[in-house]
Length: 76
Image (cartoon, rainbow, N blue to C red; front, side, top):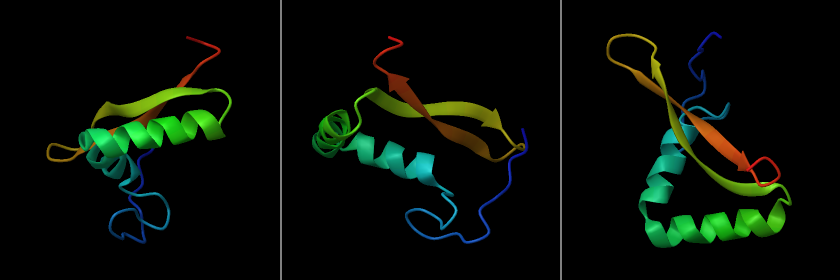
């Protein structure tokens, strides 16, 4: 798997989804906002049971990469 940086970096999320996992982690750090997002997703997406941020490892010595992890309620 190749890791390619987002060519259109923006805050909080780049145009190609760059920094999405970091933005989700920041959102989930606010427990009230995180709980609201979880409840909204459970209502909107039938298979959704939860999500989080997974550490994927280091792309180089300084940059730690993260990815989103989704939990499917049918596979729990």
